[in-house]
Amino acid sequence: MKSNYKDYLGIPFKHLGRDRNGVDCYGLLKLYFKEQLNIDIVDWWYEPDWSKKGCNYFISNYSKMAIKINGNPKINDVVLFFTDITSKVANHVGIFVERPDTVIQAFKTGVNVSYLSSPVLRRRIEGIYRLKCLN
Image 1 (spheres, one colour):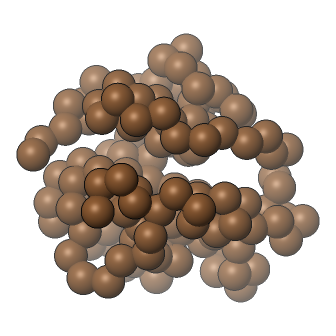
Image 2 (cartoon, helix red, strand yellow):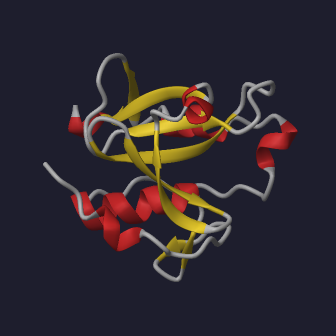
């Protein structure tokens, strides 16, 4: 299975954005799953810089619809990251779009491609998750 992930590259960043006019990292997840898999995942509100307050929204919310997996990720699996590895708050998300390590993510610079073979990204991984409905 191959995704059409290149269609998402360059979408600008927008806090709480949920469409092609702008997305944040969770908005990219919602948009991608809706368009690629016809799955409408739940949404929630969060303030900018919520993780600096110790809120672990991804773990508490995303884990209700996904399971943490061990082993090799598949296309459409999700990787949670710590942007501050000392905080232990997973506050960023990417989507596996090509095996074995290609993900798309929404940053302040917009949606782009990253590779988990990068040592910098590898040490920031909290875990890999798969939607329960895809398991």
